[in-house]
Structures are given as C-alpha cells and as structure tokens.
Image (cartoon, rainbow, N blue to C red; front, side):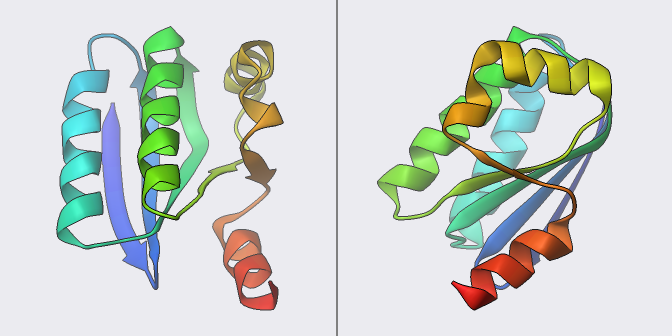
Length: 114
C-alpha cells in the first residue's frame, strides 16, 4: 500500500494506492492521525480511486477517523472508488453516514458553496 497525504485549506487529503488490509492499516492509521493533529485540520477526504483492495480493517480505519473528525467539529468524505472497494463500502453501510463524491475538487467546490 502507498499512502499519500496532502492538505488543502481545512482538509487532510488521504490517497491510498494498492491494498488496505490488516497488514497495512496500523501504519496508515498512525500517519493519518499524526498529520490530522499536527496540521490541525478539520476534515478528512479519503481518495480511494486507486485502491485495489480493502478489508474490514480499512472500514475500521475510516470509521475511526470519522469519529475523530466528528469529535473535532469536522467531517469525513470519500472520493469514489473502484467497483470492488465500492461493493465493500456499500455492504458495510458506510455510505449511510459518509458522503461520497466523484473527485476531490467536487468536495472542495461543495464546501465553498455550503
């Protein structure tokens, strides 16, 4: 798994490439949390477009960051994923609480309007 972190305004952008599973989640969680708190960001945007595989530990990672963001007055967003990952996200029910967008730019545009 490759993890790319960036910031735009109040948003931490988390881009995954490859596989997010029980072998890689702990390292990803630690890096995301460190950036989130050190950079003092409000929201997290998970860009899953280049993620090939995710298991339940990946769902746990997203849900844990969702809780952290909510506790700090922020939100979590997901950028659309490939069909395999999207199926796992739908089955988990995560789409009922986290909004999904086709691109990072569409999230940023929406937050500027709202």
